Length: 611
Image 1 (spheres, helix red, strand yellow):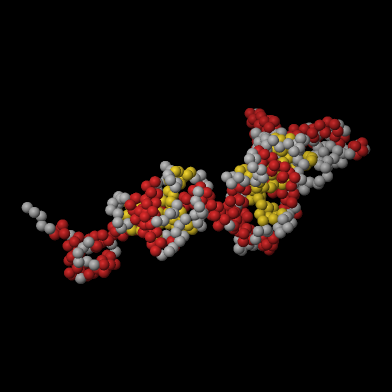
Image 2: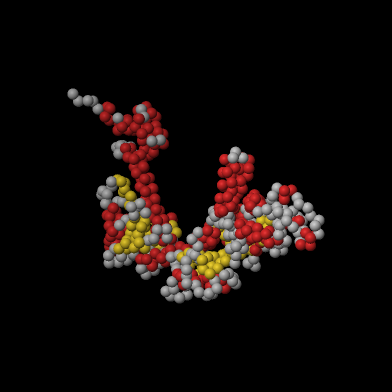
């Protein structure tokens, strides 16, 4: 994909929080970033005047964009860190070399310490996080230390060091915050038991601790120990925020595949795949999958897509998180989970959000990159619905406009290859019809339109639309029959909200052919209807306005077009002419004509009243 093609699809990106990945020439990820608004953030890279040599160099290397939609900016931050660690993109210099996010680490050592670290060593220690901010990480460690008396010192507590007897108890022991394993007061078994409970707690079992903190805060408040209660309140807020925002699953959700799917009306199925490693999303991919077997159910198709994606990515996950049971039985050792709540449900919702976004963006991108292709599909769908012999590449639509028969007009709009052809639009003044007779008016303008096209040997339309019902369709067919023409005619049927709801069509008898709302065909018909209505109403309004402004001057005997123009040029309106004095009119058009105009507007005033 070229830079120009990327710029065309930028308006199709979602305005949602998420992470984006820039793909280089060899298909590798060269940059990962997060955004509160994906469209705005990604578009900023492709402005004509991009600041910074590094950014300009990065943009020149981009050949594709992938993204993952999440629920909040905090979730995007966590996912970004996981994707950077997974892909190690070459252009993420700042994040890769300078900045990372805090983790809680249980060190791999005798009598393990529990600490907050940004760059923990990969030495067998147990890691929790990353945390969206350092305050949440420290709150988790503070919670652990409040509940369990564990050491905070940097002493080497290997057995032979303790046996030397060189260590002494510290203040933490006297404050009952440590049981002094350094001098042998606490056994290794007892300490390890505490560590196992701490590990379980950090893996997400927060509910009991939150309730404990809440009760402790209330107890201290009742005892008027407000400063101590405030400490528990702050820790409680951190933990509650962590519990709500930590969408990336706890670490114990490891080596798990998440699948979701979405269908469209064209028979395609979109399947999203996410692989979870230690609570982190390490792979995300969406596949458009079409059935190879006739009559294959959606469950069978979903199962086939799962098998293909697992094979493609070499997944050996022992658990699948799915929205339904598709009857997948490729591996009896794999557990299928259909979650109803909790962290696994959140992971499934994240997958479903991404597959829906992929489906929407596919249509938007296709329209941006190749708009004619989408329009040809719409025209083809219209042909199929009406059973036409050929695709309606040339469509004309008629509409009448009048108010109780006054100033009757009509309009014709033309669409070619699904697009308005405004140079071919036509306006019609009704010449032969007296009063408000829409059907007779329609017969007149259709006859005039296509007789003229026959005489000039212009290409006739493939389909004619009437902005009306059976009467309008019948009037058009009668006019065409008199001209010896056979052109398909359909009516645009409106619902109670005056929106196009169906097509009225049939060779022998007319029947309604429904059109699904918000489908591409619906939008085309809606556009045609709105365009012909706008064009007819505008023409009628202009004609009525001119008629109202000039009617009284037109019917004054002895006043011609030239004099009328002089009056309107001088007085600006008929109203001003009617209120002008004889002297003012004489100055503008001379005494003889001034007297005629003055008498025409003041005849009643100059008539003597009868006795």
